[in-house]
Structure formats: structure tokens, C-alpha cells
Length: 320
Image 1 (cartoon, rainbow, N blue to C red):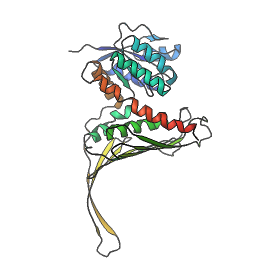
Image 2 (image 1 turned 120 degrees about the horizontal axis):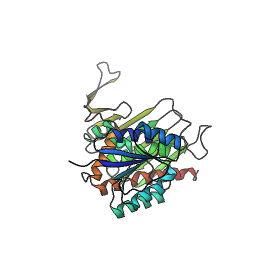
Image 3 (image 1 turned 90 degrees about the vertical axis):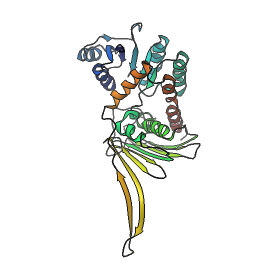
């Protein structure tokens, strides 16, 4: 039986608290500490999950893995410190606050051949996992991720929302885009001047496949919709409700009076292959990488493409 992994968590905010809960509930891991510079917050969360609080990153000699859910600007230094101590790492997206720094972190993880994951959580949505078992030859992907405005989120929608569906489109179509076209919109009076509220992005792939990804934080309701088109079927995914519907067009004909048409479509609603919380599924995969059940190099190589696309998207802030 594999020994429990000793996991240290960095960050005691909303996402960090969720990670603490998932790690604490795992029968394959032990939460050995929470790192946060805020005494009151760090001690409170550490007490809640019956672990130790650290004001800064401790020595990692007896630590098997670190999960970083700190502010983005702290990711680079934390990641490089963790990797230098030969410790497995899961870091929330984005990996770092620039593409160059992201490249440096991934290169260091590659050089040391260490388990490394990025928190691209929608990969582990039960509806996405189910849809991936049904998709065979996709050529067109559309994704819509719209939300009402949230003042507490200071970054633009590219890193907050768009990255998830860009990552899914790349995963579904099986290659990296060769061309990225994007238009950004700046609308809300409370947004930071450099933080986009809307991002419409078109990705073109070498095999001719196309993906259109739309992100907005000025909507009036939350939408998380993904559609995957193939020649023989359409797979629609509602990531919010976590359901999948498959459509297969059969026939089309005029009605009896010639005033309209009749369309015949077969609709399939497959059963989800899992109902597990995405954060739990992600952490399980992280442990599997550490235990050698999943190839670490393959996981690392899947991280950079979506980061590269988002870097090209936000370049539009300065290009007008």
C-alpha cells in the first residue's frame, strides 16, 4: 500500500480553503501545514483543518508535495523555491505573472523531472470527462463563459475565465493553435483600466479546425456552455449543470402543407462517468503523478499552450 503523501498548502484564501478541505479529506494525503503571512487568517484555517500554520515557506525536507494557492505575483518565487528542493508542485493558474516566468518554471520542472500541475480545473469537470469519452473527430469548438460582474476579482477575464475554455479547446482538438485572433472590451466603470471585461477569441489550428471562445464578466447570468462539432454528431456540455447531450441529425423534410420543414434529430443523454468534485479529481491526479501512475512529462507539456494563447490575447490591451 502506498504511503500517505505529506502535503503543504500555501495560501489561505477562498481557493486555499477549498484545497485544504480536499487534502484533509483524502485518504492518500496528510495536510501537514498551511502557509500564509496573515497570522489571524492562517491560524484560523490551520485550526479548522487541524494542522500547523507557517508565516512563510518552511524547509521542505519532509514534505512530499506543495499546493500553491497564493496571489499570482507570488507564484514564480514560490514555485522556483519548491522545485529547487525537489518537491512536487501543484500551482493555481496562471503558473506565473508573465509568459517568460511561466516558461522558466516549467523548464525548471522539466530539468528536474518533477511532478507539476497547474490548476486548470475544468479539465476535471464530470461533464467534460464524460464528453471526452464521446468525442472522436472534432473540427469545431465553441465555448461561452459569461458571468455577472464581481468587484472582488481585479484581473481581466482572459486569466480569470477565458483560459479554462482555451485549455479545453486545445485538449479537445488535440493540438496547439497556429493563429490567435482576439478582441477585448472594456466596459465596467469599476474595472481597473487594464482589466478587460469581455474577450472574444478565435483559434485556428493546423488541420483546419476552429475554436471560438467567448468570455465576459458583464453578463446578467452565469453561462458555462461548450459545444463540440463532428461530421456525425454534436456534443453539448453544460459545465455549470454538469450534463452532456449528444445530437445526431437524421433527416429534414417539408411539412405536409409546404409552409415549413420537419427536422428529425436523435438526442442522447449519457450518464456521467463520475460525480466527484473537480478539485478532488484534480488532487487525485496530482497524487497519481507523484506515485508514478500518470506520466509527469505529459502533464507538464499540457500546461504551456493555454498560457501562450492568453499571453497573445492580453497583448491586445496595448495594441488597442
